Image 1 (tube, rainbow, N blue to C red):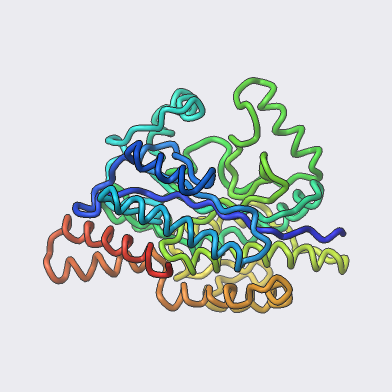
Image 2: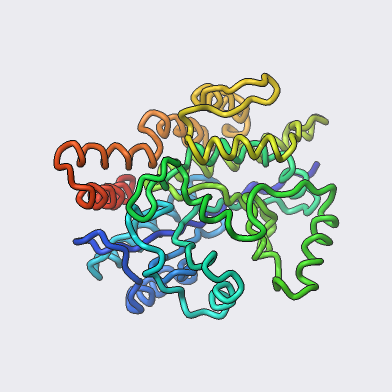
Length: 375
């Protein structure tokens, strides 16, 4: 099997808030213009006017990705501050009302609003997408089929959306509850070949329902624009270093699957029903209630699963120069996921003051601080 490049590209979506009130706000045209000037094609508006999306260049390794993503975050933060605003990297704003938001005037977004109605209008959510360079089309499909097993593990570690419209949802990743209302989402189907994938997508394109595969929103997909596999399962991470640990895990897991394939081995492909059960556990509980090990037929604690993953990809992390980032995923469990940290801030404020609105605004202030923590 030819060795892919395993290059990296990271896309993140941020929400903009008023730095004084913590309220969600729409991006001023002057802010977007300043970002566009400073970042030269690496920033764009998102579906809602309160969102900003950034994307790294094609990066050879995690060190290059760190430098570029840090620069992107730093620039967006500084330009937002000049406008009295602040970015937060959380998948849901703790108390904003989706009905008060407006979508960006762009033909693609106008079409989404027309086609999907309130399902699209509720999309007050942000995610992180990780692209890994896999040039050969057949390899992309082969690795996609195997990699789907690990999607719940990544979701559990990344969870950052416990609150929705001023309420604790009880979920670690409420973002997926919103996103899964869209068509063509969820775990990717299993395909026997790239040709089969292309034929299946083409059926929907030929009907005129979608214009291309960019409107296939599975948790993992072959990119329409790049020779990459794009992992889309993760909530966006408030802290830069946690985002990089997740990206490094994605990169190393893909290399591990390629490596064992070179030894004529494969990761067992389990039914989507079973992987979907783990996906739900990650969405509901994050890492705290564990995930099912299908071979052992038991629920295994996430700290044990993470150590198994680190050991599994250690040769790949060494080869790719990202062992520090891979082992850095332990810090997510040590600190608690963003969802857990947000709840801790909320609980402390409620204990001290008993004021729900004040507690929710304190959560946003915490997210503002975390955005800059590793910059």
